[in-house]
Length: 281
Image 1 (cartoon, rainbow, N blue to C red):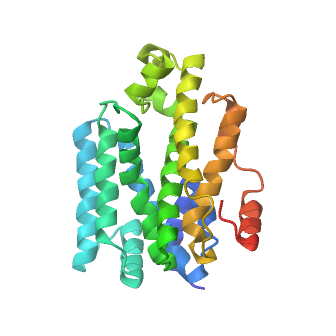
Image 2: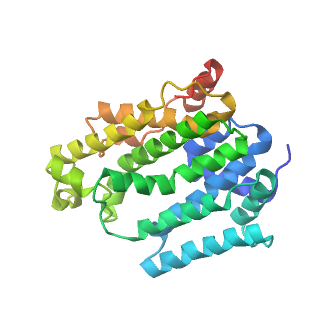
């Protein structure tokens, strides 16, 4: 199949910057993969906003650029930008929801704030805005209108997003970004000074454990669902989350354990086997 230059640009970007998402895209039919690469590339572009700007105002300008770019796609006048051009093709072919793109952008505005999350519910609300619409867009591309698939995709997205935060905790802490809710910090006896020390501690491990249990609970809620293989590109992030959560548990919930940064062994083969036997998690 011949792909456009902007499709290949998005493919290469996602393969490098969001490799696990790239792997899940390989389980979609070949004609649908460019749309998935465009969606994942867009998500990468907005997700990196905080780390690419030096001031909050610049971050707001960057996110507004993407709001305008999405609006222009739906107005029929897309900008000359590799990711935008790829998204234009995906929107035109698969009828992707404009509101989901806008929710993702609005959710990323929270990244520009240093205000802490009060509790796990507030953290999950943030994850709902920054992960669930992404998986719903993937489901639109693979054309799975299965109600239980949507329920599973939402749970998988939230669990994968939370697991990603836990694995990247040292990076966020090094950037003076603390995503651990105040309620969890108090329960674990964790202080801001401990977080900023950039060293593991029993209190930090306990806080991470509590949040990991939230991710596990989201997955357990949908673990028994039997779902069509067509939906697996949106659901395999649940399997990825479980693998990472298992590794985190073995590390004693120490986010500084170097094992956590290693790639999933035999990643593609393990997912291929799951697809063969019809299991998505």
